[in-house]
Length: 189
View 1: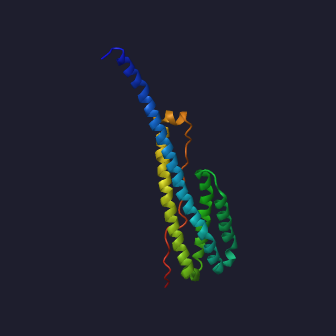
View 2: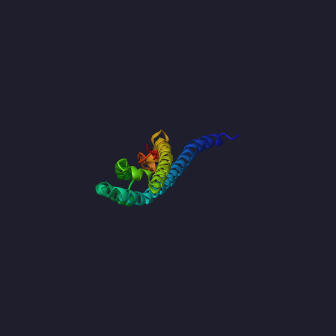
View 3: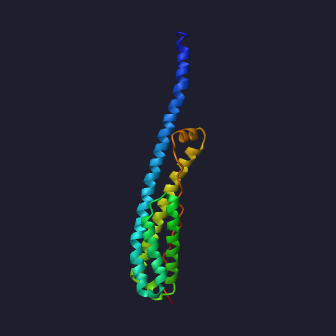
């Protein structure tokens, strides 16, 4: 082997290995960022499903508890606010947490109306809300898992150098508790 070739091979390895690492790390970060976007689409779909249930739920409760107008109006107002919220997940979580709290207050009001708690339409809507909340939480966990993987890649050395060089921005977790966990037993006496 020619002695002039050995330094070229060494130089090639010194240049190519880091270049390959940068390319692979960059592509991994892009893929993780795309997984986050896709996972957020799933969260958004489930939140819209909740928004679609709220008017029927409010209308049913209003039929039995008309004098609870303030609670019902607050739920309706927050639904509109959440539907319009298009910011970062962390910003949307602020609105979503307010909506969850309002839904919980509305469902607490229902406890004062035994006929409403036994109404089949209300029970069906409440079951649908529980199902939707489960789906939201599953989508949220999937989204947050993707954010965790992305953040780990962006924050660990040496991939953090690639992330910083190419401007990969931190992503927010989405933290929203369910508004309802289970359908209460409607049997009395």
